[in-house]
Length: 237
Image (cartoon, rainbow, N blue to C red):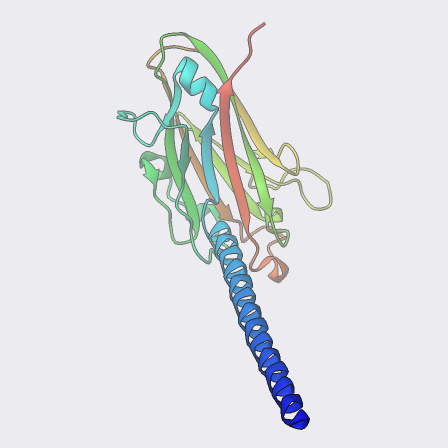
């Protein structure tokens, strides 16, 4: 009789152990699933961050709310925008700047070519006061040194300026460029004085990988670069 009781106790203990094992297994499976989901979301965010938003235009929201400085893809705008995003070009390969159409600044909004980004927008004073503004085009992120061969052409009211990074040997600007990048993170700056109500400045930004640049070599393949152009009202003294 004593032996039977012992067997029952051992059986109950074994059943509890089995139940505990099942619970632990389920918890581990759940935690593994959650971890996989987190990794998947992080990967998706990283993927889309790499694939989209290579060029963004912004206006300080305070300046838009208080002074009416706003953005639009067309000169006749219906909505005041504080932020605009250009479409991305997938798998961009190198070209010559000579391959870009001469009238590239004549189309509004995104109008990319096979291997270049082109975006035209308008900075508008929709307020009641005359103001002055300044803008800067800067590099948010770059990988694999792709900025060594990147070119950025900025048209302001039809006037074109081509920017490129200083030669890797430090000897100055590339021969196809009008100006060097201001720094490792800033491409160019612009400003306007006496920007009256209803005035609008037209900008076109074109970005490509210059095949004639000596730094356009295999090691930059797969590199990414992201730009943002930010405008704000210039402080007056």
